[in-house]
Length: 419
Ligand code: PMP
View (spheres, rainbow, N blue to C red):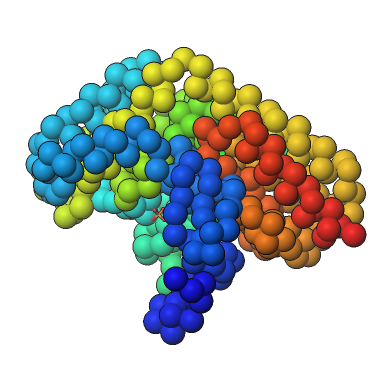
């Protein structure tokens, strides 16, 4: 096939975005590699925006999926009981929840990250009987009207055409890992009963802002936020759609803070294989919906249950988390080195785990680095309100050699742009 994007330009909506940043036609992928129709090989430091934490076409997941389809396993069953669902629920409980002393009911909200966020916001209203939500600047939670209302991105908000209910009320300003005064402000605000302040139903946030520029909440800050939420009976919703499933070095991103959020939103890599899948984890005491009160045709994708169950086998290995953390340290060292070596970049390292990058104060620098890296065969995204961050997001099981090769391409791109 010719590597010609005209058909996309003519037939696909103008809203297409990633195919503009990565202008080629992809055809195959395996692990951390992708190939286009010209046979050019790319290193994937993007991982489907977090949907491919275990890389492309993981051989064990593929085998299980092919066996399941060959045996005429159920592909679609609404939310009926199925063997595939039973296996997934059991494995998630045994391998992830129980060992972490986390007691959650699993709810299937629909296939996307936006669906799990929407379900969390809705449940918080139902349980608390309140409506207000507190969300943070630069947070990203999805594209439907509810999820977009809690998303702190003016460009995305404009997509709704009409002013949205403004819930983005708190600065997420501890991204240099310091305890932030914004929580003192929040406490003062909540205590001010005389002004008729409405106690919110929920607080929603990511512990590392994936799209918003890798701003990172410190464990201390999260603990303080958790205790404020407990004091006022506010739902703490952690959106782990992007930062979860091992991305930050532990299965859940909030583990280092030792908190147990009321609701946890998971999607993207929870399905393991890149299939559309999401779950909402709900504390048992909040499991308040009557049967059918939250519904949906694609609530539970049996093929995703099969791959998700297989993916959790990675977590049976006691060394898996350690291996992610070791790679994260290598990424930290590499990025710190780049910051020192290329002062022209005027940048600093951000993020944690295998979710780190560099924010450059030079306009357009990070976008140029990503574009040059793409030319050299590395796929990498930019993040932040002004695309000021270039973001290293390889699969969490990437091997050391591939990681090193990625570093070389990125350094070469930085060197060229800094010249
Ligand atoms: N929450 C977070 C933290 C995300 O990163 C995303 C997607 N980038 C979403 C929610 C929305 O997920 P989806 O695109 O699957 O609807």
